[in-house]
Length: 178
Image 1 (cartoon, rainbow, N blue to C red):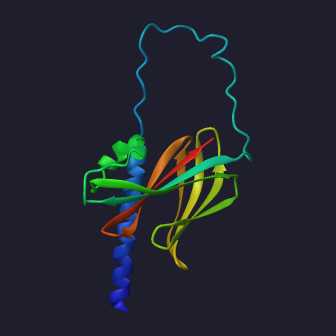
Image 2: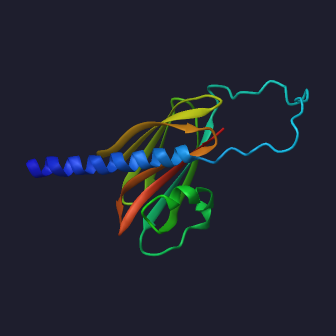
Image 3: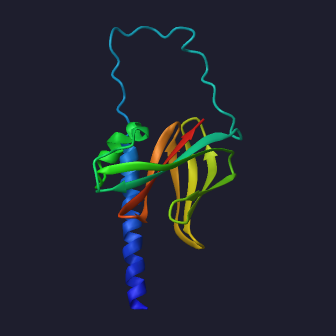
């Protein structure tokens, strides 16, 4: 029983570390562009009210299942926009195994089967003009391996470091667009 408890604590620490790394990588984001040239008064067009999405409208969620390894230096071209985040990880090769996209409304759950007999469940808790709150659950069989809620900035990607898989790990970049 002690061995199982130590193994569980070790796994929990690894998951927590991977989740914290993913959050830190998301916080890096893309730097703001510097404004160049003289400042001018905003035009009437730019002063128009910003349209905000309806709270109950759907968002598009895209989940990539990425296999990260140290077996090479190839990075799948579909991961080009995530290169800065990937460079911070301790792996050298990244290949996209699958990509799933689905529409999701607040309160709705989307379930996706992922590599290694795993299942990923996403629930859109809420969204506003700036961000979406998403509950992420990862299962292997009937065992829940991850259950967390994250805030994902609108039209951005949150990277969840996942479990071991074939001489590497699975990584789940989750993008919410609306």
